[in-house]
Length: 299
Image (cartoon, rainbow, N blue to C red; front, side, top):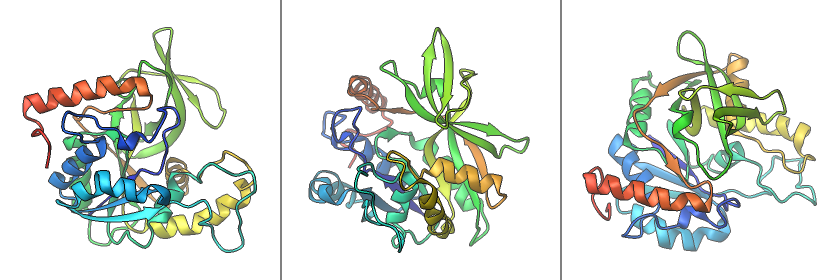
């Protein structure tokens, strides 16, 4: 099984490349903890999706460390990586989104895999749950996907709004609908504002949301290859439009081309959406090290 890490974002709200911000006393990044936990859960191959401009700095600061424990490959998300017949509009600066990022690794993904954000801490149990799900599937399964879900109240920050995928389930614990939303506390209530512009709605403290930890069969790659040109025809001239994994998943589920199992985890998520979030993350990691959950220095 492969671990695919989305790490191409500059982190504009954070004010820099947050994937390369040390988060503990020994200089480890959140990415180090992610690879360490995933390796323990059974993921022995990692693909970093980054910008090509950052390759040398990224490999020198992160890659060379994790290469000690897992096989590492690099894929480069490039704005010009488009299907034949398409070209980048002159005013386009924003990357094409997370689904396009996975396409950047299409030649490297050879087996069932999970994706994670490079700037999030998910905890060992989240990887364990995902690994157990993939291992439980029949060999060469297709369209049997899963999302490791977290309680929305455990994924928020005091420093602003966050983007989360609100997960609506059917009676079998499968995804019925995924609503990409901007979420924030307003007058003690948690309010979700769908990114498609539809009406805001209130969610409970224990409502489940996606933190972009998805488990996929390798057939997703061909689905993305087929879907991307269709998406481009409708959105290529919309300056900030993005080809997003949550949107792709929602479409595949609604068309009956895939199922998405919602998996619960005991892990506690934390991350650095904003620069002001960093002290809390550093404190949380130190607490885990002091408890013996992680050894100091990791490697």
